[in-house]
Length: 181
Image 1: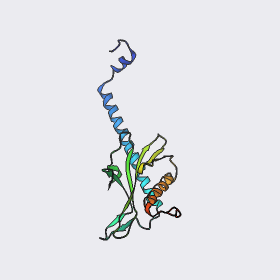
Image 2: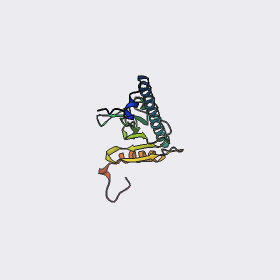
Image 3: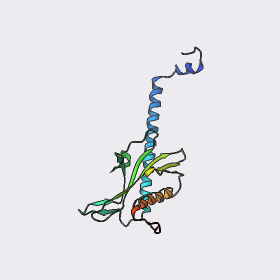
Image 4: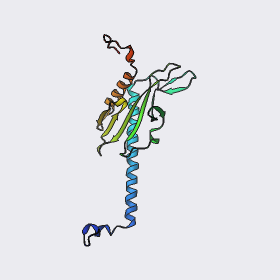
């Protein structure tokens, strides 16, 4: 029910369609800008991770002579199938975060190609460039709030490498007296 002479409702009554269109365009531009920033930050994280591995080459060759990257970004389908894709092709979540995976080759022998995957959710926390990164494999969630500094993804990269290293372990080979694994 509208109450006559209410200042709020009288203001609403003066809105014209041009204002609605302008607001929609502003929101759409803000959405595009946010998507660009989130994807750019995700790409920066993947690049920082790859650089932190100190690889001699960015690719290895399989038995057919095909060059395959050691580090790949992409999506997981059906909870287990990783598919490499460009980060800008992945849709943002409803909260404007980006869920993606970084896969690292852990067996670069010619018949190898085994991957270790770390699932990531990246979001922009504030207008000051603070990025939120959540690593989410195997129910062991770890959250980083990262300020815009030089080498800002160093700690995240170290955690990703630790998780990849731990994925190589074989629990059946670990004896109580041998904790080297």
